[in-house]
Length: 207
Image (cartoon, rainbow, N blue to C red; front, side):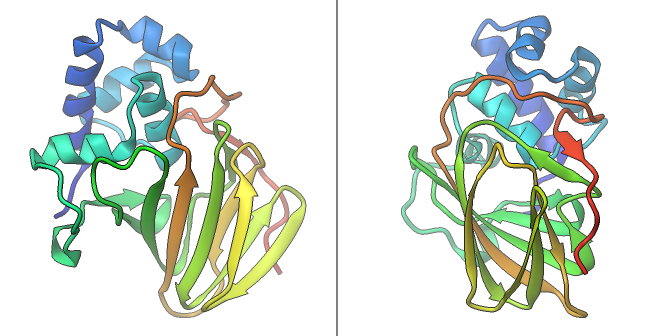
């Protein structure tokens, strides 16, 4: 099931209004600009996964709740591959929800990076989460601050989300990564300086 920002934005607007939260309050809670939030809620701009997490944290829910509201489905322990919500991610990448709704202690995503794809042009940091990625196929490079790691199929890496990070497809074919984030709870705003509100810094690329 392909889900676009045109689908998610209005759902988050309804959730925000249902929580009696103004755009100004959401901006203060997330560090995202009111203009960006307004454009996103109307489906006129794309939000990164870190921005989505900032918004859902401020609403006291997780990303699974949002995708479930878009699909208007009930809880099920089984998530069929053909029914996974899909959303564009970063640069030439697609993320899908792997975990079922109702999970509150972690989020699980599968990210497919096309050749040359990445999480974005610069590193980003968000919240206070623990993250782990497992390479299912292909080869990816991971930037963690000044550190560089090259991961092949079967390799894994864990890190804290407040560490500036970036993942890039380091091979000539598509790469698949399983991405686990815990917990999807409410956290304070991060320092932000990009258009969509994620803190980014440019470092030298992976060799």
